[in-house]
Each structure stands twice: as C-alpha cells, then as structure tokens.
Image 1: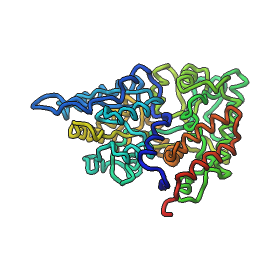
Image 2 (image 1 turned 120 degrees about the vertical axis):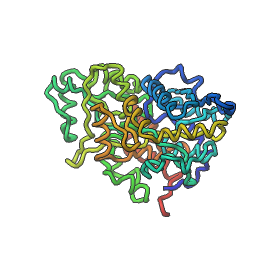
Image 3 (image 1 turned 135 degrees about the horizontal axis):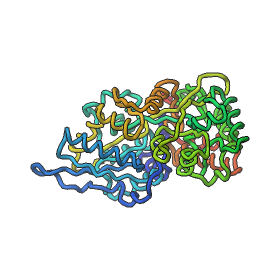
Length: 438
C-alpha cells in the first residue's frame, strides 16, 4: 500500500488534526499543559551528572504513571545515571500537543508514536532519530516493527504494547440472568434482549468521540469482512464501499436499540464508568481499558469473549501494535535516549508493561500472573485480525480513519446511511491509495 499524493508535511498536518485513536486514553486534563514539552534543550552530562530525559505519552491513566515509576527503578539497575520525567497528555489531545512541541523545537526527548501512518508522517517530516541496529530490535516480529517505520524503510520506534478489541461482559450480571458468553451473533442479540427486558443497559457505548466509533467498528467488522480483507484491500482486491464493509457498518447500527439513552453525548469516560459500575452489562472495548475499569471497581468480575460470527464462522478479535517510543532528533541526549529504548526491548520492561499497564507486551518471554491479562494475550494470539482503520486507513488529508469516524457520527445522528458512510470513506481512500505493486 502506498501513498499517492500526500507529502510528509501534509500527512503530518493530518495526524495533528486527527483525534486520538485509543491506546489507554482517558485520564486527567491537568497534565496536558506541560506534556510533550521537554528537554530538547537539556545540557549534555558531565562526569557523574545525572541525565534527565523527558518522555511524552498519551497514556495518562494512573496505572501508566505508576508503571513508569517501576520502569525508572528497573532502568537504574542497568543505567543508574538516567532520570525519566514522564509527561503524559490526555489521549484525545496528544496529537495537537505533540505537533506544537515538534514545531517549536520543544518536544520531549522520547516521544510516543501513534502506529502506522500517523507515526510514519512524523518520521517522514524529519523529526525522529533512526534506530536501526539498536540492540534488542531483532526480538520483535517484522509486522510489529512495521508499525514504527518511515516510508524510507528505517526503524524509528520500539513497539511498546499490543492492543486488542473484544467483548467484555460483567460475569455477575450474566449469572444473575442465566446468560453465557455469546458464541454466535444471534446469541449476542438474544442476551441483549434479555438484559433490556430486565432494565439493564446491554451495551456501554457512546458516539461523542470519533475514535470510540472506529474502535467499536474495528471490534465488530472482522467477523463480517473476513480476516483476509485488510490484505485484499492492500492489494487493491477489496474496497471500502464493498457489500461486506457496508454490512459491518449495518451491524454496528443494528445495536442501537441496546445502547444507553442519549448515547450520542457519551465519551469513553462515561462508557468506562457505566461498565465498571454495572450500569451496562457488555462493552466492545480495548484491552488497554482493563486496568482503568478495575481501578473504578476492583471487585468487578470481567468476562472476555471474541466477537461472535453471524454465520457460525470463527469469532474474532482485532489486534494491533498500539504505539511505540521514538527519539526526538533534536534531543541533546540521544545516546542516553537510545539506552532507554534499548531497555524497552528487554523482557524486564515487557513484564512491567504486562503487570502494571495490564497490556499485552510484544516483547518475547514477558509474562504475567494476572489471569485476565493472560486470557487477553491468548485471544490476541489466536483468531486475531488487524484493526483495519489503524493499519490501513491512517493516511490521507484528513485521514480515511477520521473520515470513517466523522461519517459514523453522522450515521448515529441520522444524517448518513451505512451505505453512504462506506462511500464517504472510499471517496477519501481514492485520494491517496495506490495498491501494493501497482
């Protein structure tokens, strides 16, 4: 898959305008004012002087803040002279904050990159230090490394975590009404009907934030598109306005009767709270939300299930590399930053990600004794499909992913049909897409 016309800076401007795409969003607004700004101007170390490195991230939830405290301790066992200053920004505001910091030469030393097209735009704009040959990179799979490469083929980021979308359900509510994890789409709808009759909101959902819509569609779509759809799309053998893609959007819309009242005004914070507090029994959600849900309600019993197929075929989850860490080319501490990125390739770092962030680590050998996280990792390693909107639609001006999100919001406001949503996205794709090898 290639870009037809978008230059690096044009693509970057789109990335900056795009809303966050998940990956542990939510969090406090208070951190946003200083996040992404950093020590590009920090002085070089002298003698035994401690080197201070700023780290910009969209993971602002407390579990990630706590995770980086553990990272600091573990890092200093290997590199005692490096101090990390973690500066998270609310996920939905990260792109704008990072854009401003990069353009004013005040970005952090170490930058969290959105995966695929968005990260590639920053690399192509010349803001990042290539890290080809960094010790430990050979431990990642090629498709994981591809999420943080520039169009020049160079490696710019170390994959930080894998995310997946699937169905979460409240085990206690399901037990109360004699329900079991749905194995088919019909069973999913039947469970929703039972819950609705008992005055329990079946699905926590909201269409206020665009990235939540592409995330939810990304969870549902593979069982309607087929696991090979992204590959066919990349080769020019499948289009977004195809009948199967329209059907995936129709399936999302068909769940409307089971959404909360006034869902058009609800965002992820509301969705998370509804599910965590038992106001809703199910949610299509990202693996990165587990820790935040449990923080709201440590006693919740969460069940996990892949999204069931409407045709009796294999159920599915969507999985993708959800960000990486790269080095600001303007940093005056590039050598120290490379040591931090090298540490991110280790089993020790991967285990901290698993245990603290409760997110799946791409580092081989990283392990967790958390039953829920282990189950997520097992699902992602099974019938996983790419998160199509992230892996294939993150290009264009605005990106086709943003067009999908805006069009889905229009659909839930009654302004577009599923067929019109698909046509709008295809129209966007036609502005930049050129099939691989053509």
